[in-house]
Amino acid sequence: MTNLTSLLVANRGEIAVRIFRTARDLGLTTVAVHSDPDADALHVRAADAAVRLPGAAPADTYLRGDLIIKAALAAGADAVHPGYGFLSENADFARQVQDSGLTWIGPPPEAIEAMASKTRAKDLMRAAGVPLLDPVDPAAATPADLPLLLKAAAGGGGRGMRVVRDLESLEEALHAASAEAASAFGDGEVFAEPYVERGRHVEVQILADAHGTVWALGTRDCSLQRRHQKVIEEAPAPGLPDTLRERLHTAAVAAARAVSYRGAGTVEFLVTADGRPYFLEMNTRLQVEHPVTEAVFGLDLVALQLRVAEGAALPASPPQPTGHAVEARLYAEDPAQDWRPQTGVLHTLDIPGRVRVDTGFTGGDTVGVHYDPMLAKVVAHAPTRAEAVRALAHALAGARIHGLTTNRELLVGSLRHPDFTAARLDTGFYDRHLTTLTKTAPDAGTAALAAALAEAAPAPDASLAARLGGWRNLRSQPQTRRYSTAGSEYEVQYHPVDHPGVRVLSAERHLVTLEVDGIRRMFHVKRNSNNTEVYVDSPLGSHTLTPVPRFPDPQDRTEPGSLLAPMPGTVVRVAEGLTPGTAVTAGQPLLWLEAMKMEHRILAPASGTLTALHAVTGQQVEFGALLAVVQEEPLS
Image (cartoon, rainbow, N blue to C red; front, side, top):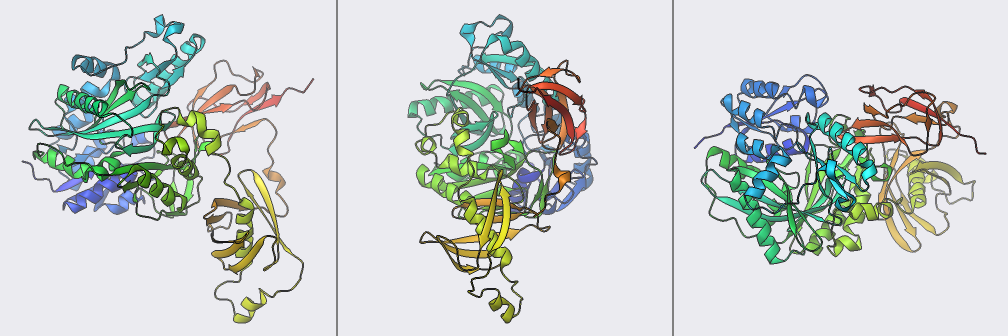
């Protein structure tokens, strides 16, 4: 048995904070590492000690295994936990940790290596009797093989994945998938397999010790995904026959035993509409969605990881599961704008209710461009699925999240969608329902009225005469305020106590109570520090309003046809042969921009001629930078 005393987490954000929480409960000293942008991050503030990794980009910081090991030794840590992402599935790093005399909180390097390549892993699984989809040779593909799914052999998270529905686009898709895989994982190998329409993504959490015990900790459904990345997960996977559950458990245990696994891991399957399971991959690390399994089984998987690493033996069988758990990933992104990630100051993050919130942020923190845009994971656990889903939706609907556009409304809408509540789940959910789920929240006009009344309210420290004088019931000229939100503008004309269909019951700087069509509602109002945005939260929804100046600044106008960077990032690709003078068509991809671990296409806004191209591959660009200009063809 090894007796651990100090733990370094080779990661950042919510997973580092979550691991530190368990480490403290176990009496371990905690050590954080951080890049320069993360110097004041929550995971740094949560640790007993922190070591700087000079630089900003992951390649210079969190992916530098040599610097992380040096930090662990300098801080006196005797163990390293990799979290997920970054170096968590890097066999060479695991070996280097062990060779340095440190304890690796993860599976043996040989197991990581065996599962690192999806193509090699499938060969191992085939030999172990785990069900698999037959691979397709892209060079010999025929129309009968379509649709195809191209996948990077050396990574996950949706990077290097493309769906191909016609043979004409296969070559270009292979090139794009390989380029993205090489950029993300340093390995451009891509393979093809049949794409299963309306399949479910179901996985099994496993935990193994060094004494031959392997637990299968139930199933999780992770079918609701955007860009092949999970958004909502739950345990157990609903609606599976007992025979299928047992088959999944048996296959997952066989996969773990085939590589002499130790620690926590996940075996992922694709389940077809007619109930046939196929092995996808094995993640040799803790998963983002592990809290739903913890809730259902009453376990702390991080604590068990640490105990297994110390040499402890697991009981012969796990505890019995109880109830149902659902997790939603709250992202700083705009689902209505091609899932565009958001950066800036998170002024408020307040999620009420009896839910678990794992986060790497607090109000006032900055969400930067270098890392994943996930703000938090919110988890509800209840005796039944219906109760858990309802509790999670209610908590998210009541959350106050100010400063950044998020996917909160999408999450609430997804949890309340008839297909989700009826457990009609598959990976095409957002392909079918995204447009409906991203409609602008209703009643922005009433929110604008509440914002205007709050702005007009006297300050709390105003004299009594000033406070009373501000609310005389006189028929004076109405006051006017203008706000914009989600592309719409609202002009509010108001008297303090006189509005059609609305009674003002009270109005203070931060709380306005209105009776709207006979129903009393409370509107919480908050302005950011520089008064450029107003946040209004109520049971009718949440709105971010931008006060509109009476006289717009003419400098804000942009020449027609200008393509501006929608976020800070790196130009990773320019369309082949694209130069000034090139004819382009509306919607044609011109540039590819990578930001916050996602790749975004910059499309031609109209058919015409490219008159300027300012972007080059490898260039770092700021938000709003001019990338190119397209002169639209005149209508004939």
